[in-house]
Amino acid sequence: MAEPGDQRVDRDGHPSWVIPFWMLLALAAMFFVGCGCGSFLTWLSLLGPFGPGDSRAPGAD
Image 1 (cartoon, rainbow, N blue to C red):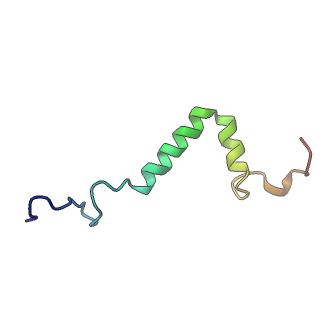
Image 2: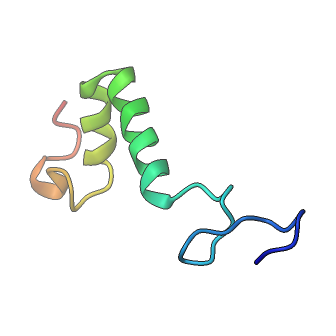
Image 3: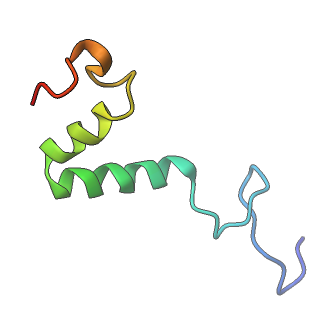
C-alpha cells in the first residue's frame, strides 16, 4: 500500500488532482453556451471544418 503522504493516483496512474481533458472541454462548452449560443457558433465557424468555411463570400456580412 502507499505510504502516508504519497499522491493518490487513479487507475490510469495519473495524480488525482489532474483534471480530465474531457472535463476541460465540457467546461469550455458551458462557458461558450453561457456567453450565448450565437457567439459559440461564431467561434466554431472560425475553426473552418466545423463551420461554413469558404462557402461564404469574403465581406458578405
